[in-house]
Length: 320
Image 1: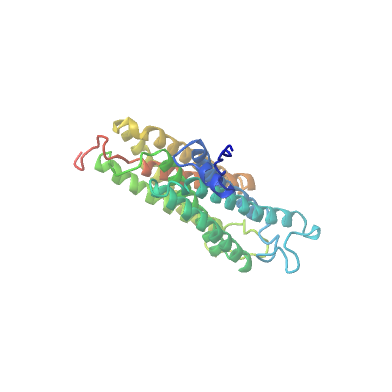
Image 2: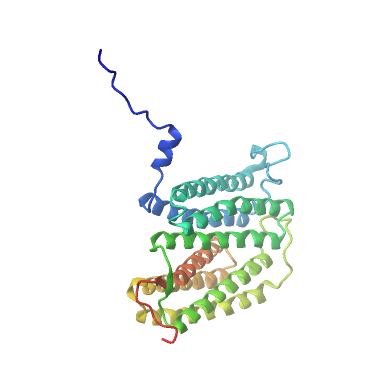
């Protein structure tokens, strides 16, 4: 009598899916980190289109589009299509956030930084959607609309940190630039933040309310444009210092690249800002300006994140 051959049972679907997920940083993780940053910047552009086309109340309520319909209706016209379309893009952000989290969940012990970043972004996306709903329910209150935009600024910054950390060597890190350079970088980041916040107030005082019946914040738009330019030019001057000083930083940090990118975004942002102010704030230029603002935040974040190197690498002393 012959013994029947034994067979190893195949793992279940859940087990196979778990084993398919990355256990180390691979191409999927890198691509998904970049996808996270791209969609967070992209939603700013589509959100700007909603506001600039006067479609902010294209769906007059939230979370449904109308009191009787989850989606927009033909009677709502193009404004309903634009507003509802922007709402649907939130699901793209959710899908990307879920995939990003799944792609780092197996390395939650080895790469706690990526795990918590992905989790934070994933939890922040629905919060951002809720703030968007509040903007509709408050009839596009300019300060709530500004908060909605600023929430996107924070999400873009977190996404930029995620991208940088995906490429970084895990473990302790130490300052790898002269102390004066680090201080100048952080001061520059403060002026970037001030520039963005004042820009939000400028937009809240201008003609693009998102709807013809929405209120403005009551500030003088012409005066606010001048106020907006002050921190922007200070940021430009400080960035020039960073670009010049980056040549004396360790090449491994690639600060010449990142500060050059920061300078390029700032220069383009200033050109677009001056152009839109002198041509009556056309929709296309204002939308470009809004997107460039969050790209500026992403570039500034990358510069800040690259001031340190792994502890095993040579670094400048605090007195350098």
